[in-house]
Image (tube, rainbow, N blue to C red; front, top):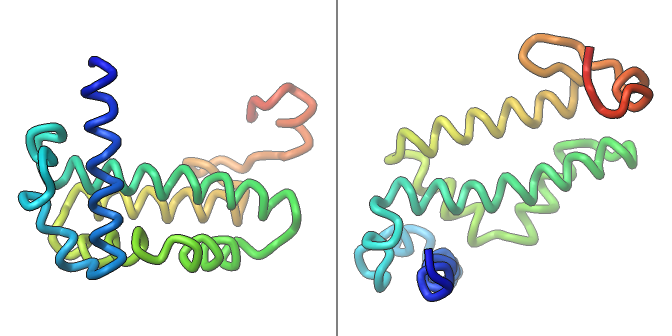
Length: 137
């Protein structure tokens, strides 16, 4: 991928989010965003790129919430209030995108893991993880 391709791919989500600030439902008309489908291949791929962006920010917020002892749901709400267009766009698109709904379920599992300390059914002992350099047992 060339730098021009990279920049063009980065511009698509930015344009979609700019449109979502005006109207999240209309922002889902990806065929009206120059180059969107050509660069991403499908509407689902664009939505997954936007979900990935949200998920990365959320993961950082959740980690900080656990560290600070802040309720996880407060961290989610704070992020949603800081990025209302992105959240509204993802919420609007979830009804029509199966891959996005799967990704949202993965997000829910990430939230639950932060709340419970469980990953894939295994309890993580935070002290053991810290003492062993981050690996879980």
